Image (tube, rainbow, N blue to C red):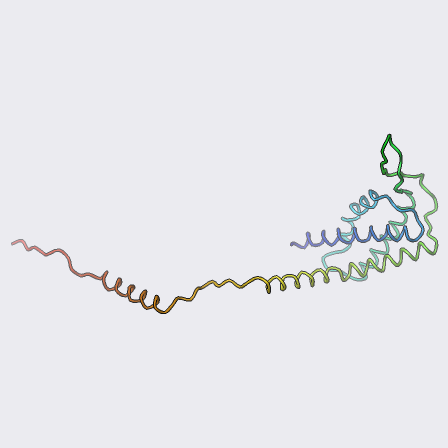
Length: 190
């Protein structure tokens, strides 16, 4: 995997984890539950930004600043868009639609909301900071477990002694037998 691909994977993981935990903490903190489509849209929108901020080498300071900033942005967007999953009756069936309410002016968070977002930020930082090394350790463990279970195939097969002696005799006979110095009789013209 190239460094760009690795950075994009890290950015996608960071944005999806941060978005989901921000939505959960926003709901636990007393806010309305954001619509799943809004969560997906924000996760996709934040992926390139997160890929740029993550960088080629992870830094705890840069990661912490990014997560705290993203929690603030997510809370602001969740409140400003006031997007909730509200069931509406359309004909005979129920459909869940993205109902965007009127934009609200109150973006400031109370103590419960602020605490929930800070806990989500700490959990997100811990998960992202140690998550990649944890996944690498699990992958190494799985490879070693699979190697232990797979039987080792022999690349060279042992040759029984009687066949080896017979083969050596045949090879020597062929080599000696191929060297014939006899040719047609030489006629002299005279």
